[in-house]
Image (spheres, rainbow, N blue to C red):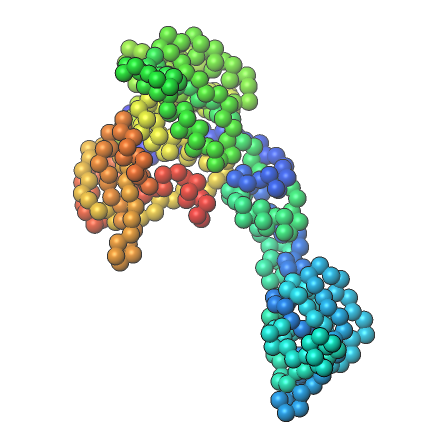
Length: 418
């Protein structure tokens, strides 16, 4: 049995190599960028107005006083999308501008529409009257003030969000280089597993596969296979592995049949293959029997997760996800700190992943409550949890009020926030 820290070191060393591919930027949501992507142009592309109104040359207003207003001749109306070209602009000229309209010299400031005094009247206006000095660059958006040409939009290993798609399409980035999706196959094991709607009391529903599949719906992963293996399906399992070794599969995952019981056939089957970076049993709870290996001279990894639903969920969260993210070149996830609301005691040699609830104190401190029902078969408390508490090995008692490391229930929750 190894420590969780040692297991993570092995996972990092065993990462799979994923190729890159060019895809249309509009289809890149939740994919992982394989390059630094830079803006090919300035945005806004040119100076433009932030308000409906009239653009003037501020220098023409320098000598204006309220008792001696000046008429500015209206040359044209300019909307967003109109060609802004105007020739031979004379002094004391103005153009009516709509929000987003490009502003070219000599115009350098905008008077809002609400402040405009028309002459002779609004319906037949040929001029506007200006009674005071107007400052330069009022209601002005500068070209390149949001993005400058060559400015980074997103970096290597970052998840591409909908907001990045907005930037790509605004800036004219039509294709992006991303990591190819790893391909995952999943097998639930055991005679007790059933996909039937109605089951006898000696059966359990096939929930782990559906839970894991729901986790990766928001990630760049292809879920290839979901099957049930019975207790006497050892030969079928062996054939399935051989088939995957000749395919594009990257990760094979099983739940159940991984401990030391009479029908726990997974470790024995796996050991028939040439393996690298193997470990079996980690000093954690839940999930102690977990098995991992990479098939030697391949780009395929294997995870044998325990069958209890929370053990399976915890192992996917704290083993499979870190392995996937390392393989996708996503930056290492960082925990957040929270103040412990209740005393927690555990065995010193084990790392514990604890279902908990994050809340905020009256003083604004982040607090973590250890929920009841921590057994690995209990799903009810998991539905109430919004975080995992991380209690490392080397210590048995954690006092109320001390700060601990916490993780979001799903790692991409943290990724999308940051």
